Image (cartoon, rainbow, N blue to C red; front, side, top):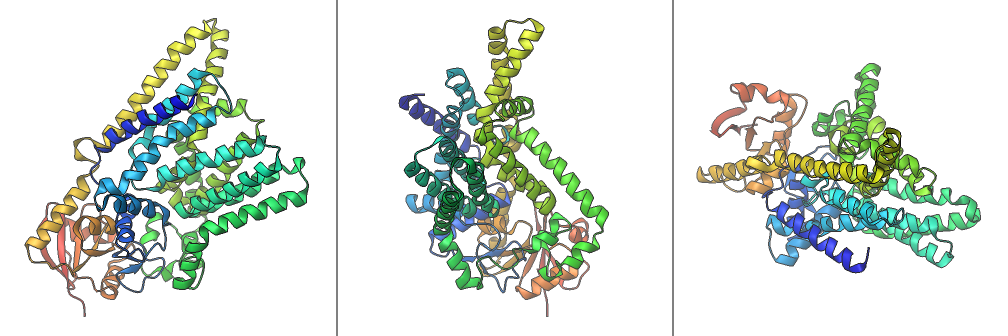
Length: 521
């Protein structure tokens, strides 16, 4: 493609994402609410604290809580930059740079595709897939790690393509340093981003036959230095605050026996003994189910079901290329991590989030696999290959647009996407109208979303037992409990009827949410 065509592609993509973004008025779910609210905190110069607690893994001492003990900070920093630019805390300001980044995705996809083909129709098809991006379309313009990981992953693969084809040492040094920087940014985006530093070492190992071992080790050291330069402010902050490079509780997810252990209180119960108490059968079965679920995510989300066979065929045809071997090795490593080590995080969106880093390369592969497969079938069935490609190709692209639109509509139309946050905002108005002062603190499900929408500080509903929840309320000086339809199981009685515990007095109801006043000694 020419430079003018790339600019046009970016502008068309930008218009598409701007229009789509108007259909989402709120963050819609906890992750995006967290990053949006923390963007506000950073923009206000208070990025070191969170006015909520959403997980107890780091054993937070008080409310407000020290920030970024579980999720990484870069997404919130990008959200903050938009707020600073517009001098506004609006949701549009928070997502402004995410919209700009989303428009880059088709451009980066075509740049990757050009390393495999210069056929215009294949490049246009890759761009089309990246614009009508299936399940990703709902999330790319939101303050979440999806678009950052997708863009950084595409840059990473572009650098690798150059590295694998580059023989001039001065340029190799630049590529290696850039890979270290991108890997550092990916780690600042997601905790599993550290895999991409390992990926740099893997890529250099794949090139071991083209240069002396000493030179490869030197390049690995350079990549590590570049990565460390990006991460050093984060590590220094952690050392100053937590006296270690990683926040406390970072290892506790190894001992989960279910996803709700993320909200366990106290977190000290998450031990090796707790993990072993689940029994070998459950632990093995959960990991097998996670592996199958993550495979389904690749087929259904990355491949949008209809494209998955052609994506696989395209990868097979290009299997001798180092970049494809690298893709498969890294995908296997991620699947291992998200299925066998962290299975519960993997099946609850972790693998989906992380998969976005691979997506641009896959969109570049799909048209190649599709064309090769249809041509082969056409010869076997004695069809006219060119006519078959035009007819079936256009049909599949239209089907892609329809599937993407259908999924987006199912998530957003009729106010579904914004419903919980609109209800939270109404609940906040209800509480203020009934004399609840701004210094009162709440326990609620989705504490980041509640605090973002109402301004009240809050802690997350705990998992385990009601007595554990009461202990958390006492420790963090909680005044009210809100039990909505998405409550955790220990609050079933409080939702279907009334809490029987004397510490919880029924205070009122807003729509489907019951409100209890907390009285603890």
